[in-house]
Length: 200
DNA sequence: AGCCAGGCTACCG
DNA sequence: CGGTAGCATGGC
Image (cartoon, rainbow, N blue to C red):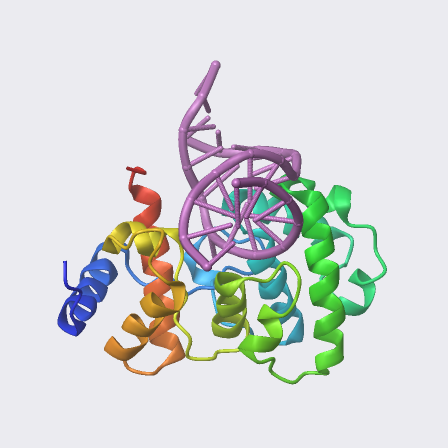
């Protein structure tokens, strides 16, 4: 199928009508939509980054357990987290050996930013941060207009696994207004729809 | 009881 | 280079 700009726009409207506004990113272990929101402070921003790493190939429900454990230990704080042993706390999110390392690498980098917004290339240079994670961090934590492509996006729109990530991303970015709020909502709606679909 | 989840790296040919 | 095994837990 040729995915035109008009198609991308109309599918957005359809998904919005079907699932209502998602208001990502989910923060504070809240399952009802009222409390989903963009980050309002540094702590929320950091939590989004952690969630983006923890959710790699992992169901969000499991990520929430890990985040809740970190929250109880007051570790949603880069300065505390950097010296903490978090392996057992993040165990529910799976791949805990790798993810502890990924989180530590990222946190060290995050502290070095001193509040500055990272570039995509900087994020991609970190061990454990690939394109989807980098773009999720930029879009949801830093409000940068970058469209996030994930497995659901490929499945829903019929892109094969071989189709280049950035090619797909640019297709969406060109078709939509350059507005992080639109990219935010569209990706969230794709996930909402994707969760209702069976894998082929 | 499997299969799957909001990927990424390392290694293989 | 492109392709793929390995990583790990919990929900459905």
